[in-house]
Every structure is written in C-alpha cells, then in structure tokens.
Length: 333
Image 1 (cartoon, rainbow, N blue to C red):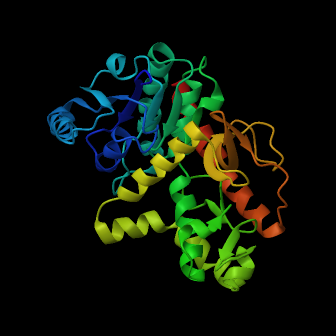
Image 2 (tube, helix red, strand yellow; image 1 turned 60 degrees about the vertical axis):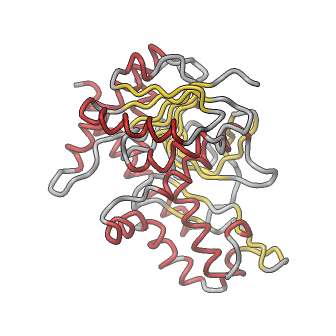
C-alpha cells in the first residue's frame, strides 16, 4: 500500500463538504489504492457539527480512510499537506456590498495562503472553491510565494460540466458524448461558456457542437445565459447553493490533476495567467482550457477565436482585473 496522503478540506462542516468527503474518503479522487488522512478545518462555532461529520465518516467504515482530523487551527489544518481544497469562504448575503464581501474573503485567503506557505508541502496542490474563487485563489497564491503559482487553481469545472450537460441534453446524447467545451474567465455571471471547439458524438458520428445542436441562436444566447446563471437558478429552487454538483466538479478537477486528462481532451480550470496566446492579461486567475499530464497543466494554445468569443473573453477578463485591483488594495492594508 502507498503511504497515506494528507488532504485538507476547509468549510468542512458545510454542505458542499458533506457531499464531497465521502467521495474523497472512498477513493474516487486520489485512487483506489491511495490511503488518505482527511483534515477537516472549520471555524470554532462549527466544531460540534464537525464532530458529527467525523462520526459519520467513521461509520462509513472506509478502508482507505486512515485518520480524520477535525480542527479550527491553521497550524494543524495546513501541516504537511499533499492537497488542499479550500471550500470555506464568506458567503454573499443580501444587502452585503460586493466590495465588503471581497474584503472579508481577502482576509480569509491571505491567512490560508500564509498557512500554506508556513506549514504545507511545497508540492501541495491547492484548489480554491470558495467565492469569489478566482480572486480568492490569486490572493492565496500571492500569500504563499514559495509554492509555485502552477500549484494553485480555482474551480470552473462545475460550469464546464453544466455546459457539457446542456449541449448533451439539447442533442439527446449522454454527457460523455460531448467533449472540449471551454469556460473562459471568471467563475461568475460574466464567464464565457464556449462551444466553438466542442465535439459531439452524435449517435456514433463525430461532429462539431454547432452542427450537432443546429441552433446557433440558442448556442449564442440562452445556452450561455443558462450556464452563467445556473448557480442562481439552483439557489432560487433549493434555497441553498449547489452542493452535490459542486462536490462532483471538485472530484473531477482533483482527479484530473492527479491522473491527467484523456488524450485529445481538455478541461476548464482557473489558473494563473502568464504569457498565453489569447491576450488574457497577466497576473489573473482566469479559466482556460487545459490538458494535464504528470500533475502539470498546460494551456491548450492556438485555438481560433472569433469576434463573438473575443468580446466575451475580454469582458470577463475586465471583471477579473477590477476584482484583483480592489482585492490588492485590501491585501496591502
């Protein structure tokens, strides 16, 4: 058996974590022969709830789960980590200004970045889920200067999966018959779900998504807004934010980092923007199409970008530049 790896989940008493922890502990993410030490971090008032989560994990009797460590202390939570999944953040509440929300989250992710710097392995893979995920991820990485920027990513796989599923439902095929959709930019309502390069296996015949769907106005209209606003639609219906689907996307994202993407396929993740072929400004966490091998991602370069796409990609970049610049003023404070 391999040596156990240490995996941290923050916001561990919350509802995304509740849907996530079982999948990690049973081997769906890091492999069926990889023992795991699960470290569960949350704020002090949530510790009694966390004890209940620990009991349930024990009661699952999972052979790969070697130890569960609940804590509210960063020096315990971030020690010797192989993977960190940062789910916990200050949620948006009615009447809270976006700027105030950003300020609160800068404080959280600065602390967590500093803890990664001080306690975690330098090889740690960090996935930021808590919103605003892209900017939180940037702040965490800037607060952990000795951990490579490439080790940080933020979750846009949920948007990617939403886009894939929308196309599949429209064509009437299973979702695994749709590949190479792209989410560009911010995990927000300005994100750009792009299917110009997507391929659909339409009942045995491979074709472009535009040919398979055969409805350009839908693909350039309702499809995009449905994916952009899906999170809000779930909240409206459930009165709670996406948890099951977010947990599934986290598993997909981390599994692909660990084991790589299939040949000829790419996935979307928010990564550090530096010298790409798409004219995206540097020093942002921006969602790109990536291929992953040996735990290292590479942006899929050289895809043709039409004027429609260009406008959408620039729009979401502008929002990220604005978020970053606001966040950095708080970081210096």
